[in-house]
Length: 180
Ligand code: HEM
Ligand code: HEM
Image (tube, rainbow, N blue to C red; front, side, top):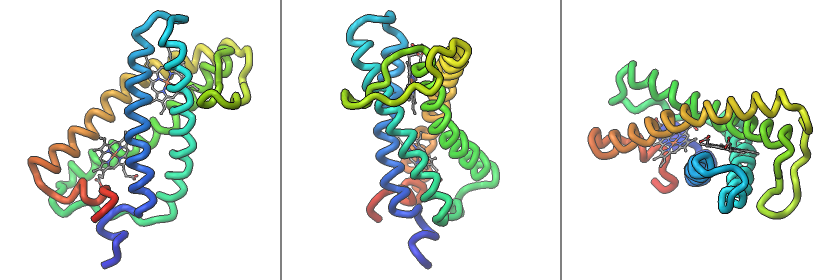
């Protein structure tokens, strides 16, 4: 049996854990900033970091979709029932969708709303929708609403991993762990 039939591709595993760290950081910073009044410090500075992390996550997600499409995903562990298999696939599809849609809606809001798009204090990304109030509004509503979906889907994903690792004691985490 080749390695790709029992675990995810090594590149995909590294991208997964880099994504996990950056995504959770972006999510927590976003959550904190959402609770602070607009225009205050450190909200302003932290939002710069949030946006830069979000754009990095978008680029990583594009790379990941390419790697995922070109490599074989391992079949679900034998211990998974049909329902668990379906739920885990649904959860993974939702995570991929959020990885692409959250940065796009955040970008729509910032680009059209005239806010800073400086990348980690270096260059600025182009504003494709400059001044378009409808795009800014749609981006803001979608980004803020989908934030609740993020908390739910990521929370379920992490809780399910902990359940499999410590209660079911199966190989779910090992399939994604960098060293086997
Ligand atoms: C995977 C990437 C991203 C995730 C998971 C994410 C998540 C979040 C979350 C959870 C919030 C808090 C929402 C609230 O409490 O109202 C937020 C706010 C925000 N995000 Fe993102 N975000 C991402 C990418 C981006 C990007 C790429 C940009 C811009 C280029 C951006 C711009 C913003 C802005 C401006 C806010 C403040 C919105 C407000 O206060 O109404 N985000 N984000
Ligand atoms: C501490 C945080 C995390 C842990 C412990 C974790 C754990 C895992 C594990 C064990 C798998 C393999 C599941 C299986 O094969 O059935 C997996 C897959 C996956 N994870 Fe995570 N994860 C975490 C965070 C995240 C985050 C933040 C995202 C994206 C926003 C994410 C996206 C995915 C996706 C899309 C898959 C499916 C594999 C693929 O097709 O790429 N994970 N995760």
